[in-house]
Amino acid sequence: MISDFQEQAKAIIRRTGDRVTPGRVQALAVLLAEQRAITHHEIEERLLDKLQLDRVTLYRVLEWLSEKGLIHKVASDDRVWRFRANVDVHAHQHAHFKCTCCTKVICLDGLNAARDWPLPAGYRFQEAELTVKGLCAECA
Amino acid sequence: MISDFQEQAKAIIRRTGDRVTPGRVQALAVLLAEQRAITHHEIEERLLDKLQLDRVTLYRVLEWLSEKGLIHKVASDDRVWRFRANVDVHAHQHAHFKCTCCTKVICLDGLNAARDWPLPAGYRFQEAELTVKGLCAECA
DNA sequence: TAGTAGACGCAACTTTGTTGCAATAAGCCC
DNA sequence: GGGCTTATTGCAACAAAGTTGCGTCTACTA
Ligand SMILES: [Mn+2]
Ligand SMILES: [Mn+2]
Ligand SMILES: [Zn+2]
Ligand SMILES: [Zn+2]
Image 1 (spheres, rainbow over the protein chains, first blue to last red):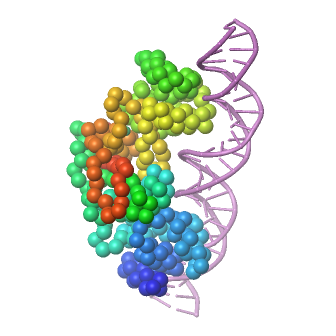
Image 2: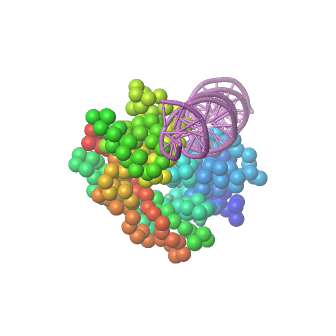
Image 3: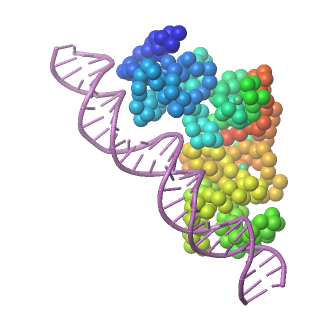
C-alpha cells in the first residue's frame, strides 16, 4: 500500500535526472497517498514513524518538488501553503475548494480558472487563482 | 486634501456609535486616500509624520474597521493582508487583481465572484475568492 | 571504492500577526 | 470644565510559518 506509493514516487523522481533521496521519496509518497492538498505540518505528521525528516529539509524538498512540476502549492487565507501531487493531466489552471469548518482543501479539477477575465486597460493577464469556500460533505 | 479624508473618516466612524479615536480616524483616512488595497506596513508608512501609532494598535484598528464593514481585507499568496476602504456599494463579493511585478493589489469591482460554482455532491457553497494575477499598466 | 556536487541537519533569524495587562483617554453626566 | 466608567492604547512577550548560512553527510558517477 504505502510502499506502492514509495515505489511510484521513486520512479517519478528518478525520471527527473536529479538525486533520489529518502526525503524526496517519502514526501512525494505521502502526497501521492493523499486525495487532497495538505500542509507542511500534515506531511510531517504522516512521516513520523517511518522517517524523521528535518523541517527545513521538508521545506526544501517541497520547493524542489514544486519546481520540478511534480506537485503544486495552494495558497490559502490562513497563510499556510498546502501541497498536492500532480496526478495525471491534473496540471495547469484549476480552482480549489476550502472547507470553512475543517479547513480541508481539495482541487476542483473540473473548474478551469484560466479564463480571460476582464481587466482595466493596459493590464496584462497571467493567471487566476480561484478559491471556492463552503462546507465539505462531512461538515455540511 | 488629507484633512478632507480625515473629516470624512471621522464622520464615518462617528456613525458607528463607537469611540472616535485618532488611530481609527488616521487609519481610515489613509485608506480613503488610497485607490488600491495596501498592507499594514504601507499604512504604517503613510502615518509616520502625522501620528505614531503602535503596530499592535494598528492591527486592532484594522480588525475593528473590518468588523464594522468600513474596510475589507484581501488575502494574497505572500501571506500579507491588504486593506481597502469600502467606498460606495463597492461591498460584497468582488475579485482582486495582483501585479506579479510590483505586488500592487486593486479591486475588480466589475467582476462578481459570487457565482454559483459547481461543487462535488454534498458540498455547500459559501463564497468564492478570485484573484487575477498579471502585470499592471505601469509594469506591463 | 574514491571524489564531488548536491542534500541534509542544526541553529539562528525574519516576517506577520496575536495575547495579556497595566496605563490612558473618549464619551457621558453633571 | 471636572470626575466616572469603560473601551482603547502601548509595551513586552509570544507564536506560527517560513528562510538563511554553514558545516557535515551522501547519492551518484567514474
Ligand atoms: Mn490543485
Ligand atoms: Mn476589494
Ligand atoms: Zn469540512
Ligand atoms: Zn505592477
